[in-house]
Length: 272
Image (cartoon, rainbow, N blue to C red; front, side, top):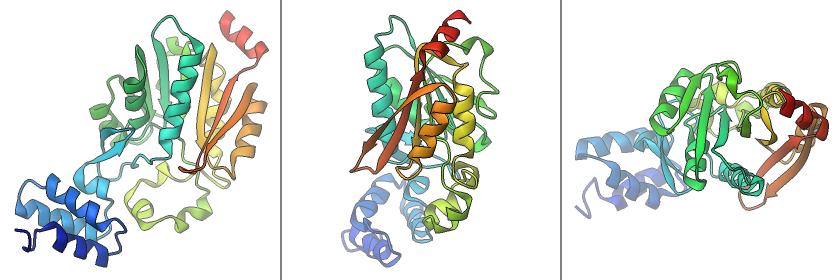
């Protein structure tokens, strides 16, 4: 088997020829994931054709966890682990003497909510996505409630003013830059999970504007963005009555804007 057509070394050569940068690691993963030689051959063929590795094997590693992903569903990126880390840090600082209520908007596979359940005690997750395929996938991953709909629209009304952590990895690629994305994303992930409008911030702005009526007085909104776009995201937070700060992690090239309610907004939230 070591020198057969289904050996990792032979598969790695095929993958390397197709342009896979981590061909050796991918070959080992495909061999371990395949249920039969025929299954392995089909998986290698799909990967050589450019299908994302995560879609081929059916899962992605995120925060040390295996997250199920399906064809067409946004694959969780490593940089989004920084969003999870910042959210967990916010939760630990707030010292909430009850269940921490988390809302994950534009949830995709549900990876962020799953990771927060693993990172924090006593978490209640509500996840939302507009894409039916993503919702179906998230329901296989998230130990919580997953809703199909547009941002806040499908959430239970009684969550208003009670959300401790409101997270959004909303699409933030400007429309004109979609064509510059790697083919794996451009061809194999849903466009609505990538396209953020003219400047990339259309959906972010809608998330930010709606946040104040859903956050608990001590809650926080966390939005993943790019370092280049972060000044505009910060401006949107300020206009909405949130006090923003920016966190950046160089190794992952990850940027998160974190906003808490201003004193007036927090007072208003507390009276609702």
